[in-house]
Amino acid sequence: MIFTTDAEISRRVFTYNDPETLLMAVHPSGKNILGEGNLAFMHGPPHKAIRKSFLSLFTRKALATYVELQDGIIREHLKQWQQVEGEREIRLFVRSVFTVLHYCCVIRVIMNS
Image (cartoon, rainbow, N blue to C red; front, top):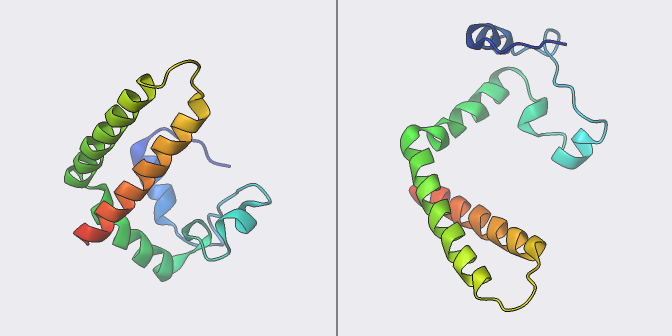
């Protein structure tokens, strides 16, 4: 087990993308939940290729777009939730807002691809 908060050490550790050297440890149900072909369980060139394909989603510009989009969605949902009279069930609100956030971000990513 490795525990580090140093960026350079972390970079060196994760540079070794070899199942013999570094193995992702997850809950025993992890593969059932995430699927055998999940990025978390991949190694070598396939892992690197998929990871590289995600890089454009995490640039400062992309993240700024997501934040702006999410802020608008959350504010709109809060406004609607405040208009509900009587007791309000927060779980339904949270589930609703996260569902909308998820689909809006997925659609935005697909449209910008």
